[in-house]
Image (cartoon, rainbow, N blue to C red):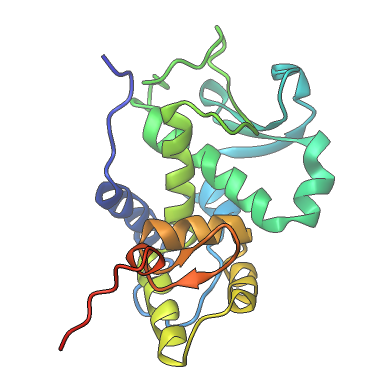
Amino acid sequence: MSKYPFITHDEMERITQGILRDYGFDFENKDFPEAVPIDEIIEFHYGLDIHWEPIDHFDPSGLVMAAIIPSDKRIIMNESCKELFEEKIGTMHFTMAHELGHWVLHVSDRENLQTSVDFNDSSQTFFCRSRSKKPPEEYQADMFAGSLLIPKPIIQKVVGNMKAQGKIQMKQLYWLAPMFKVSISALIVRLKQLDLLYIDDDGTIYDSKSESQGQIIFDF
């Protein structure tokens, strides 16, 4: 039996939008993209500390981006990656949001700091590695981060306005990603998830996946 509950996309939207609403971030009445203050939400809304420490020793076989220690209410950003994070702010914000996702989704009893996932060691330290193959809870934390940092109501309005002005170009997405303070890859994943756009591996942009497959339905 799974140690973590299955979470649908709709449920993830409800969770993340509830967090933004509770924090006071207006995502429902914005027509222009604005970065979610993820560090403020982590520290002031959830009372978690963000520390910078070298944590490569957590997993010598892979690049450790960050870790969360629920018992200490502490998120650790890998100091060895600080130059990378400073160069790619979107990657840093996504990593922070990913760790918050573990706290929200996988710490089942926050008062007693009980976890619903196996944190792989006796101290219940959960570290996140840069690997292509991820366990389900890592995918959940990624989905949480994307949903939180790129709120559905905002991106729907923005893309709708862009479509109204003509065919969307990749350069527009490269302009859009820094507005949310996310990486271009995180933005593309979110657009695909919401079926707002579909981007092929060669960078061709379609209005939907069905259009990319030549299955456009015309109304006559």
